[in-house]
Length: 348
Ligand SMILES: *Cc1c(COP(=O)(O)O)cnc(C)c1O
Image (cartoon, rainbow, N blue to C red):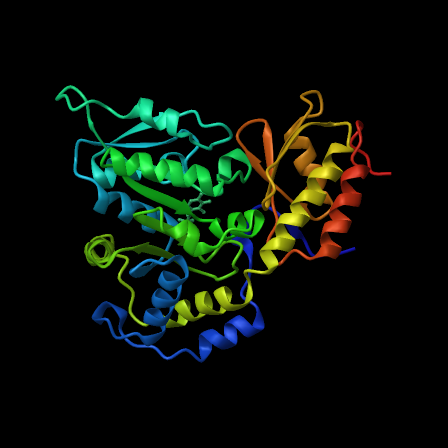
């Protein structure tokens, strides 16, 4: 039987829907490097308004929006304070050192969530022996911690601490909408606390390409220079921005279902005796570990035979990410299949 794979490796695997493609094909475009693409402008204005920021910049990837943000907020010899699991540190090819000539101060957040106390202890005194503490970078949700998220009070307190200590506050919001719908927070409430925010359109929101950087006008002006030098200036990118506009108009609600679907997966995994540990933080990611005598790798292979794709996450862990293209029916099938994997590796 040739069944279509259920791809739970990442929420980057979403494909643009027919309606999204129509929106893309119908976009009014121009040369955005010359500031003449009306659809890119529309996207930037729309998302800036949503988060209460003055301006925005459409970029090819979340790595680029994060790296540009850190570049424009720092000078060489500065120190960036972040959790050790941060995407900006773990998964951006050493970009902080490469692009910004900065050091990082890595904290052990509780499930990737930083507290004011941790941050306060990491701020260096003004002494030439130390790098200058300049930026605090939060991630929300925290991918490597299984999609954990911040309470608004926590962010507010961190923001106040940063202001008091003359630190800038950046948010890697690759999955910020998963956090917002889970915590019932508004983008505007959250947006006010950050100097820069990176938002991905190409994850759960389902656009094929693109991330947006949010900040004030002056910072976005600088950001545009950095985007150019990184080779991220795009011409008729309104075709891509149109997908982002469509996603913001249509796909935010579905994230609630994605979060719930991940919850169902977590519950179902717990019923399999081979599963030793499950991490689910309420959003669209589930991390789990299989007992060593069976191994996570073998569990992954057995799932793949059933047409269910999950990804390895470090040596022992597996990761499942729910997204726009995963329906309730698929989740039901996945949950049933979990129970079929037993010690001998045979399906019953
Ligand atoms: C996916 C992701 C990014 C951006 O990744 P790109 O593939 O460069 O778009 C940034 N931060 C986190 C936490 C992510 O999960």
